[in-house]
Length: 239
Ligand code: SAH
Image 1 (cartoon, protein in one colour):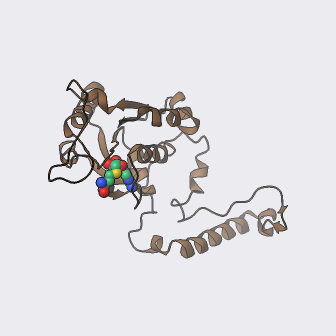
Image 2: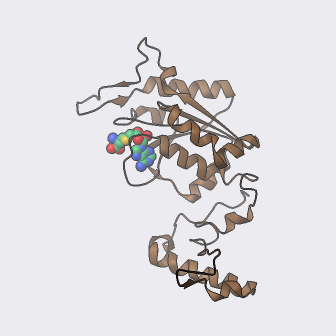
Image 3: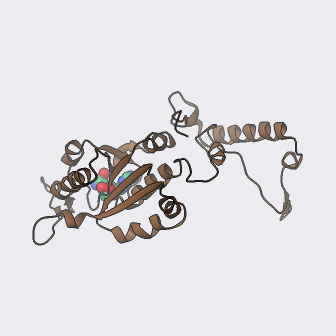
């Protein structure tokens, strides 16, 4: 087993089908990753299984209480006899990027905490020594989709998961900021022809063309990727 991921959520049923299907399902069957989903409610100790409470200071909505979340992390750490890397999903976290995915793919054990309502009691981050991670500048209703986004981006980097590791080279944010434009049959579709160079059989020329097109598009769509310290460069030595 290369990696274990524990996801703590109030809605296990929203996550389970996705981690059992397609790439994540196959990676688990191959024994490359083990994904366990925990119901946050089962870590609540009062008789109503309460997981949320009113915010101190007033304001609308509810906040996830710290005890069940911290108890969940401690339980998972004890049970697995490891010190997992804990991620708290939050729109206020560090932006999740391909570079962070490479970094997380080197870990042995991740625990991802999914918030709901107005979010998670602020103390949980400090108490679990977590990294707060955001998947983008927008607000979702829960950490379930962010947990799946992080899980899939990380798991596909584990050697053996994709089958064809070479394909990682062609991904955006890896060797070049963007992957190359891709075409498949038919050669002409609705009057639009596939660029002639791709049919030339001249591999050096194809490679050059792909690189130029990819760079040109990246510069147009994402000039920010070319600034110093941009997040597209990957951590070396993972694959
Ligand atoms: N009141 C909070 C938002 C809470 S949204 C705020 O304004 O910052 C409820 C939960 O959804 C969060 O606790 C988090 O787990 C998840 N979430 C929402 N948007 C997210 C994002 N962009 N990235 C990661 N997690 C997010």
